[in-house]
View 1 (cartoon, rainbow, N blue to C red):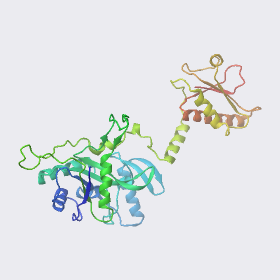
View 2: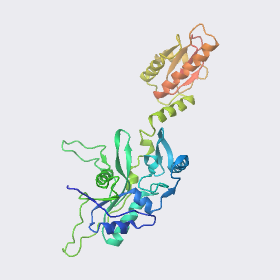
View 3: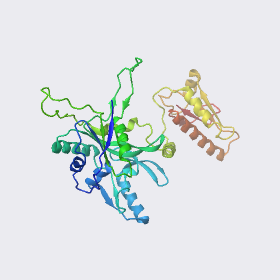
View 4: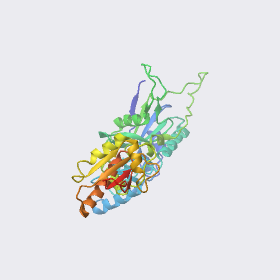
Length: 375
């Protein structure tokens, strides 16, 4: 495969209501079937009127920007000082919801297109109808990356090609079947286009040539090559990870805060799965250095002993499969009991972090324990 990345200069400033197909087609009459058009989302937003008026400077501008950001935000992922990483209503996770104040008048902000996939489909259809060329269209914007410094362009909208190249089921040269490899090829092409477009060169459109196969000529050799009628598919929406599969849905500080809130509202009740003894021992070890001196937690691992003790505990849950005895230091007074209650909750939190639910109960009859946990 050989790729060419070509700039499309001469488009000029785009304003609301402009016909992007005409602007691009006029600036790039050399476009041909099979090209991949990488279009900066900003000119799409401008043509679609996705701009808001704000004060030029001062606290009023910041307040107006915060109001716009709140409207564009589905949920906050992370906040550090003035930087806010949020999930947009599209599902994209971006700084400031993709709101942009560059290359626009100081009294305006540019928002992302409402539906970048629909914008890509519309532009592709307009180019095909007006110029009889069949290209793929990528609407691109700049994003940061959670594990690396620096920015890169990615695809927000796609038409005319699949967003992902799925290699699962293929066999590599060593005979290994690929299990997980799904390449976000439209993001790669968006990044390639950015090399030509730049951020200050006012080249909002690039063409990547050579990635998609050129159309085959008619069998009789007469006339122009047949236009590829490729289904637009689901577009860049395929790149948005389902929330249930997102391993990094919150920033570090936000995840810690969510964990603390969960610890404050920890529910009672044993789990359905058998208790992992190793997980219980790790939880006890985790709190050993922070509980009051003399406080002990004993994990009862002998089945016969545990069952005998559990039979004497009022309210023992039928599904519980683990027992921890807690003993306060002696002699004990009222402040010691308050501290012991706090230490029990510390252990319950540590158990929950290991995936072990618990229920606080009175101690077994006749034991020296002060309380027990049913796991």
